Amino acid sequence: MAELVTIARPYAEAVFRMAIESSTLSAWSDRLTLLSAIARDDQMRSCIGNPELSARQKSELFKSLVGRALEGGEANLIDVLAANERLSALPEIASLFEGLRAAQEGVKEATIYSAFPLDDAQRKALIADLEARFKTRLTAEVVVDQSLIGGVKIVVGDQVLDTSVRGKLESLRLALTN
Image (cartoon, rainbow, N blue to C red; front, side, top):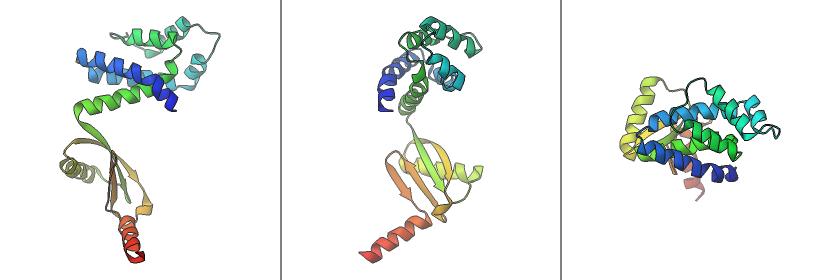
């Protein structure tokens, strides 16, 4: 997997620079999401890996599946990726692009592990508190983990905030054994 990241990074950085220069970050994010979905399709992956198809055929097929007129450098990106046999790297390119965009916009990703499902109001209040604590905007994914017993465990980057019952019990166990 590290090899795919190495392959995808220069493309993601080039698209990101182009999107910054043209002030089209959001549009490119949408474009890459669509292109990534096409590249993930099982039938398309078979076509991408088919040595009997030329780069031009793969590129034309890929473009035809977009379902709309291609914008700006979108067609060029598809052509370059097809010519270099890199169409399969599109999901990783999209992921790296989103990481660059989040860093540019000062947004970090958070994973909230909760013992119970959170409703919209609880989720919004928790995210607002976390944004104040971490002094950054957050996009959060909530994962239900019943093994926590109660409370939440929050992971933002390399920082972990564990206020779960399981976490407190583990801390108590460690304190008693030392």
